Length: 125
Image (cartoon, rainbow, N blue to C red; front, side):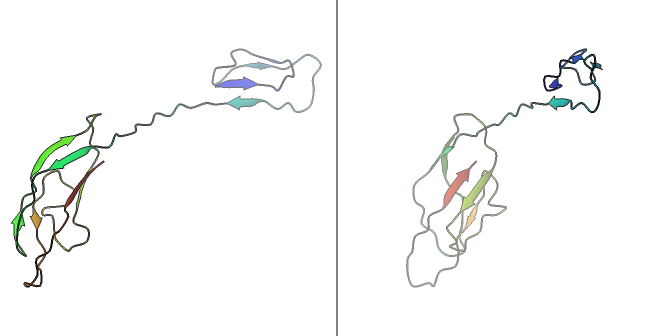
């Protein structure tokens, strides 16, 4: 924080104080413009990108409930802000929630005739 009178040669008791006393220059009259400049610091935490390693592929049928095999979660700064699991809109569910570290996965119902594969992904922020 700093007070200024724009070079009019007045004085402040303490130009860095919130409520200083200002003494105007001798012989000055009229309106004098005083300026207060305030600088604020901002701290920003940038989270590193975690790396998730899932286990081997799992075979399942529609409506099966499987537990994703989480081998390792590495985060260089040690701080995970949130979790999100995603199956690419295949229609499965992640009970109790896709926003927890270790959900189960309910496989969507297929047509019963064809095999298909799903990519289940873990995301950490």
